[in-house]
View 1: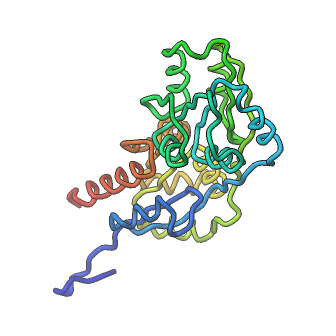
View 2 (view 1 turned 180 degrees about the vertical axis):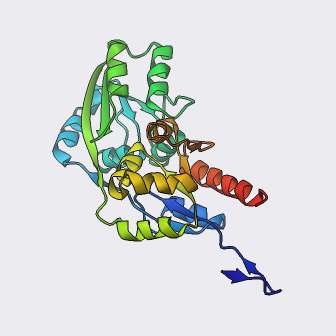
Amino acid sequence: MSTSDGGQEQPESPRVVVTRSETADGPLSSELRSLGLPVLLWPAVAVEMAERGPLEGALQRAASFDWIVFASRHAVAAVTRILPRPPGGVRIAAVGQATAQVLRQRGWPVDLLPADANAAALVEAFEATAAVKGSRVLFPASSRALPTIAAGLRQLGAEVVQVEAYRTESSATLDVEDCRSWISRGGIGAVTFASPSAVDELEHALGKTDFDRLLSTATPVAIGPTTARALADRGHTPALADSATLHGLAHTTHRLLQRSEAQPR
């Protein structure tokens, strides 16, 4: 406990759990700290590049595609590591402002960006443009990619080549006993989730009892609708980030905790 100049004890600020794979100076952790929120790093998932061969082979034929679809920043990183410049004549679609921002930072155009940051919205955006029937689409995806994009575009008449660009695995660096210690003594105000995989892996690592115990007192905050659905499927009602970006996730968490502290005890 800290004390004011008058000697009265002041409660410590509630901690915010970051479940995405990042270091202490990572983008979400840094933004939360800049807002005055203490952070606990609980990396529930680890992201690794997939075997290079299949993606490299697909990108060698990049000019034969009409579209490349990016559903995450990790896919952007995997593709641009092999193909730094966008192939001429190929249009680019992105899910979410964060993915689009990384593409633009690397000099890639974004030709299609749905208003909502989820896979279903991307499929709807393609349907609205009437630009997908008969086209060839390259989809560099996660090892755990849901079928929404590939199946949806195929139903619209596209030929979709889905290739694994990166792997999402359980994290070997998560200290489960330390997590359980924090859950036991309280003091956690919010738990941030930037992907459905983080929800899956944190529940798996902690076990359902401790996972439910954590989210019975700490507010889960989801970056987007798909992540929110993963939490809702487990019986927890999350707050949804104002925008599907790490910036939006951090600022929504800050606002929720400020509101909670302002409520009479």
